[in-house]
Length: 250
Image: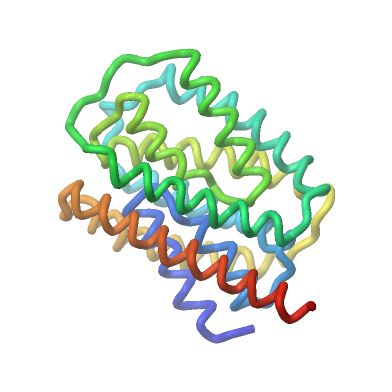
């Protein structure tokens, strides 16, 4: 186990507090490459870490007046259904396929974010698009072990929540629901260290304090660019490591 695991846990919280996303994207690689865990064990633990840290980050946000309850309920219910489905499906998917899908999704979202303009608008709720989007993101959450925030924030912006901090607040609630649903499903098939999960969660929770502070101080455009840059770095790193692992096996 690398000593870099512990400062990396703080980074998980900072990123989640700033962007309402990225917790799972960082947690899974950290657990694989710094804690030395198998992919499936890292995915199962990451869901619980992300759920705990998201609750702490959410408690620090002050966007409650702009929350859309109908949107949250629809996304939440459909997301949990999708997350359970993805967790059951993950048992039959190889680890290399999971990592490659993970990285490709990151690049797809990065490309989309580069074409989106933020605003301060929050438009009306649309049931069908919210239902379909919620289920698909939940499915990805369970399959790849991410809280879903790196897809939720862009999806919420697409559905009409153009104000970045408000999208982050919605995302944190939905991340918690999806991650818990997927995590409960993994308990039946994957074992992991509860003390290690708690230790990482505590450090990451401390990181959310700084992340939330930065969210309130930085303009939305800068946050959007920083978010995209983070995605590119993580996606490229995971593809590189997977390619090297496959190469060494042959």
